[in-house]
Each structure stands twice: as C-alpha cells, then as structure tokens.
Image 1: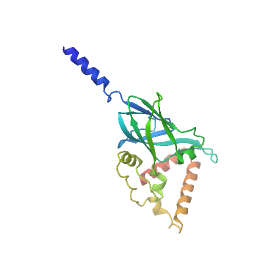
Image 2: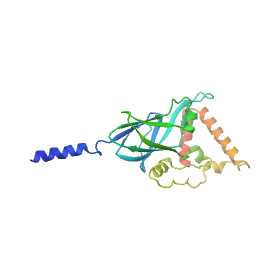
Image 3: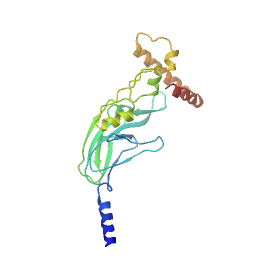
Image 4: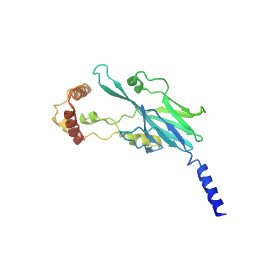
Length: 222
C-alpha cells in the first residue's frame, strides 16, 4: 500500500504543469532583460537562449544587440535596440521561438525599430503582443559628460514587466571631467556631440594599454 501511494504521488508531481514548463528560445542577436518583474541573470561570457515559462501570461523584456562592421573605420560596433516588452500567453508544454520578422541585412537600421515574430515549434497558434519602449540605458560616455538621460535598464524593464511605473533617470552629478573642462558654449547639444566624437576618435586610435588605463580612471569617476 505504501509503495502504491508513493508511486501515485510521484506520477502526480511529474504530471504537474510546474514541472513540465514551456520554454522560450531567442537567437544570439537578442538578450533577455526581465520577466514578470524579475531581472534575468546573464553574463558576458555565455548567451542565455532558453527561458522556462509556466502556464499563463508572462511579460518578457528583450532587446536586440548584434555586432556589425563600420564601413568608415573598419572596426566592429554594436547595434542595440531599446527594450521590447513581449506579452506571451503560454498554453501547454511547448517550445516557443522568437526571431526577427525577416532577415536582418542592416543591423544598425534594424535596431532602431526591430520587428519580431514568435512561433511554436509544433506549429500551433501563439497568442502574444509586442510593445516597443523608449528606455535608454545609462552609458559611460553620458555619465562622463554630464548629460545622462538614461536609466538602470535592468531595474526599468523589471518594473515594466511587473506593470509598475518606470523608474526616472538618476539626478545629475558633477564629474571630474566636467570640472576640468572649460565653460560650455551656448549650444550645449553641439558641444556634447563634439565631445563624444572626440572621445570615440581617441578610443579607436588608442592602444590596448591606454584603453585599460582610461577605463580604470573612468570607472572611478562614476
């Protein structure tokens, strides 16, 4: 009698929807940011392609990020989109596949307004919607030059997928670079754009040792 109860309990456990979860797969050119109010843990060395999902509706934040070669400098650059919020209704133990709507010929152009489709591996119907956000991530350059309008992207996407208010951009603070620079001209936007271009120019022409030294200094200014 005891063995029968144990076997029945095991069968019920293995048959539950919590064990047999669905799965969402994304290509190398996309990355997970958050799901249902929780940040998705990733790292710079491995690509997280699969996300297990239980039955029901889920809000998933992803973004497009792929490398392309600059025709002018012949050096690699990254094309990164603002986050997309995918609302996916999971029904059953199925594998869902996210992919660009068509082949990406121009990564930089695609990143401005990425279009995606979600299909099911078995060909079944998929109920989902996609919302494009305008969230901009805080960048090192923006922080250095004091015109940071970004947010902590992980926190912001977690808030959006949990249907909470989007965190506002952090307050500005003076940096060492700001202190050392001369007073800005009347056209602050042009001055900032020029400063960024100069920084990018010197970065692209610096050797590895100089880049590491600069990064060490820059991080201490944040």
